[in-house]
Length: 369
Image (cartoon, rainbow, N blue to C red; front, side, top):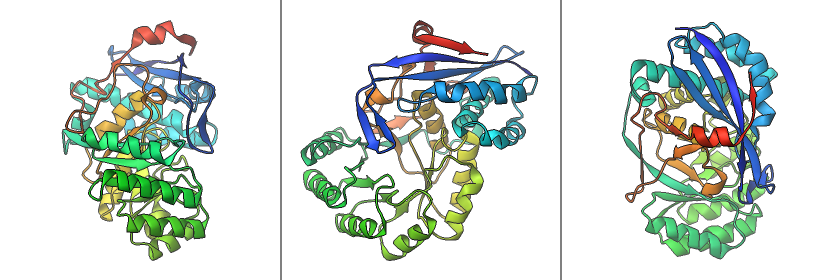
């Protein structure tokens, strides 16, 4: 089997609600563009992936994927994923890691279709469902956080994670209001998205320790490893880091060796695909660390993430970033959380996702070949 076609169809995503999670992740325009990557083969199998998100248009990354990565893929055996993955990574100096991730996902989709089984089966299934947690946007008031958390608790979701206003004392007040609203037994987490200096991180961390939060995510600058070492030494609550920067497997080594974080983090977009996620999860497992999979930025990336979650033992939850209107687009049937609060593994071959090809054609902006 040989790759004989690579193309990226850019399609419009409109009507996205205003959304903010941190200073560098804000959407006010209401529109973006996703890319549908097609990697075709002479065996008649086509692998797919989505490129882009509501806040990161595929128009930024798409041209580099086609210009630099397509020539590496044409005529190659798509089942040589490890060899191809190694060939793609040097190009991360010129193109985004998101492009590498999209290619890797599409190659895994081909492999699953060729084998006639879902990707999590190829990886080695460890579970067929996983608990979901709701991951908030930045909301206008304490009351809105509390009301949202109660709504998901009553829907049997496993947990609620707060993206706070990013003003330390106000963030503590939000966390206290949510804890009062949901009670002492419901699982809560805080993701401060790199908002604090060290003293502020200590202040907030002490407060949420007392409130019984499960983990404390990304309080400091994303590459401030030395401050993370100090923070972890002084706090009892588990620290979660390494979601960013957008890098591959090797970037995790110093975090482990310096004992700078309790859990590792990543997704198929910002870490370069399924291949990197699986390697990193196994690396974390060797050190008895959890690997908590981050939201993938678009619907098909989240399907790929779900396959990984169902194939690794050291992850706890499936993240559902809110609101749906800023994250779910391009699939005829998107991932849903059941009345039991669980998300179930895809069972079709490859990604096993129902891509909405009619919508993509109707909203088509351009085809890059």
